[in-house]
Image (tube, rainbow, N blue to C red; front, side, top):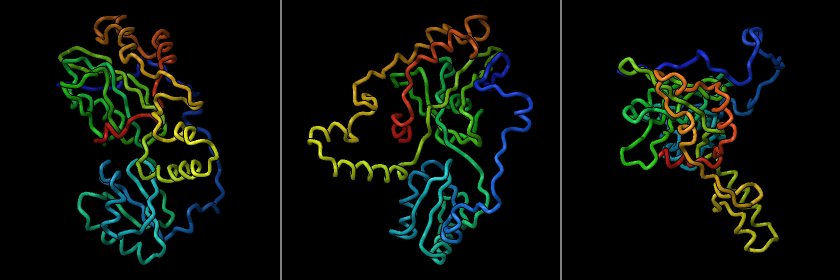
Length: 300
């Protein structure tokens, strides 16, 4: 049996707070008259999808219920808001949606109620020893931080076994950067978990951005060659904001080479997160930002 637990002793965190800050925190007093999205009261549904696949297919699901109607907006996590032109349609869609099996875990009419906060970060898991590198162990590590909604899909035929991604639901905005310990047969192994920069967004949220890009290109007076250079087909991993080619391919085992060994039973061979050598490497390591991260290949 493998026991997974988070390592806290000896680890430092960014942005240290005083004891008073942790108890009290910073407060913003909001005017009691604030009532955002009031115009949608009774004209929208707030829904939680049952899983990540249902979230990705929300427009297909909605089209099966009421073809060509409803505007979908992403709220974070597995939550969406679907608005309509009239309250009668909202009630009708809600009743039909309740009968749809395996798509919604919750659906209700928007009346200004308080909704819980959730987000869906992607966690990069590194350091699991090869003899323990199973999808079940990777998912167990991700489960330390939240509910796993996209499980690991590691195969013995994969070319790169140095890391794996899992998608989890968390209820706070703090970026994940932690060490986790695997306890196996009286031996302990350190594993490093780092949240992918930025956050995953469903494909339907990108439609407006695509329309803006297309409109800009249509009204541009530059030559066709220039337009081709700025088209969305350009690989974002090979260019920076200035259009110059850059090399973002980094040796995926740089940190592993420096750490040498992640077996906790071998003293200095296993270095905690507050090790200045490891931190200096981490600070300088190139990391693909989330806007360029190939989420889709992990969602297939």
